Image (cartoon, rainbow over all chains, first blue to last red; front, side, top):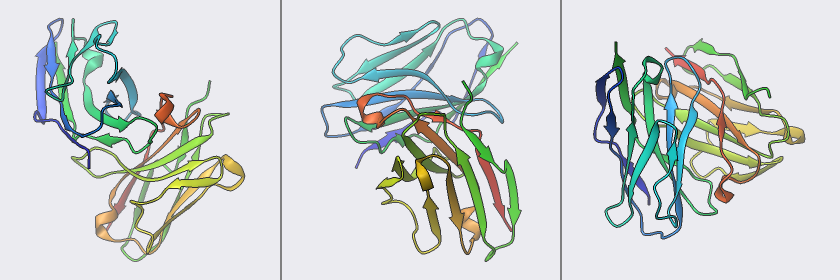
Length: 114
Length: 116
């Protein structure tokens, strides 16, 4: 069974600084997708960034980028120039190719301080 | 484009009572998911529909939980009878097609259930 581990329950960062959230996963699959979702307080979950395992190039979406290390089964999220609106729970998620059972980690609560 | 709608947003019931949640997915989205998110944990998939058919309900506690998606649009999730451990946020999500083909899942705001 696939498991997703987020070892940092809480993190904080000063506004405008950079922070990295960690995620590791366990799978024997070769084709899969990895995701980072953001869940702001009392608001719905939204997709931040997605990585296909067959792609070696790390995904980037504006201030958000990932460091995907397939051999190490590691998928960290880097947030550059942190903004107050980045304060949220961040969930790492794994999904096998062509199978819809998305597995989530326990989440990291990120607080951006002014 | 309207997002995924859920109601009610909050519900408090006593154990052994029944409760129902409603979800309206994004128009045109064929796939609908119900997740349970217990406090301090990530969401866990309960059931997945493709149009009005069930694709996966392996993690749905079928002795007390049921779900339907009549006409392949709206969906309801029911718990009867509720237990204390059912206290959680119930999230509904939808996607254009099966997400295994990399279509994004869009989440609703959730229904926070408290069982006392």
